[in-house]
Image (cartoon, rainbow, N blue to C red; front, top):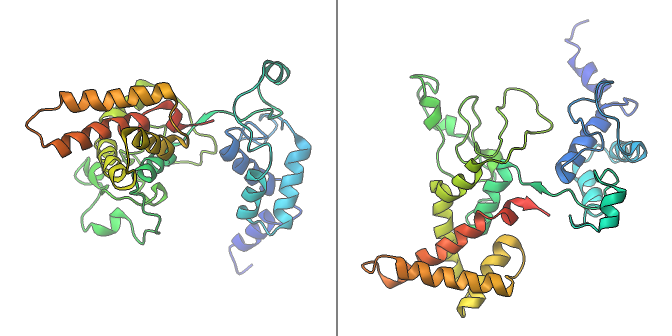
Length: 296
């Protein structure tokens, strides 16, 4: 009678006997790792939601999650070390016919990286990603009202190379580096994000100043770490972005792109700068590719 009851509510929600909390949370983790929850309606575990595709698996993982002290790390480790998670997205005709919607996970669900992962992957490829925790936000560096005059909040964001989880998120003023890839508005909980495919994605990766700058830095890093002939550098760039070597056709096309770009640049530019910018064009092309921003 002398307290608000929030402690009792929290204890009830986190009770080992509570039927929903662990299952809802585990299903969201599964959704983020596989692109689709065991209960496909991630935000709706009610009667109007979808039935689980594998009730026994849902119950097993939720029970295990509670038994291991609600450890998210242990839950993720158990899932990603499984054979099912490590499957590729390629499937035989027989597998596709037997499991057309992939409910039984005969293959991986090919899916696009979310907005934060696209930005972090670009910074990682260029060698600029700062993995250290950030100790404050862009708001803490201001001594003015961020919502006045109107539109002021749109310019609050400051350039930084920290992980996207540390970016300042304001309602109606999302970071421009994330807004192109279906970033939620941040006004309500969204377990499953909208996924759209539109020309703005390609235009962003071709024209956004951050992407262009990171492609230039990528090229600089290439010269620093990939010593050798042109083919060696192309393979290094492919491994850095797509985690594989270039095929022979891709190698030939990449070498031709670098040569043609270097020849078309203004002859008044220093030779070293022309070479860097030519390789930056290839680096940006890899960053803008579908293979870079999709998980297979």
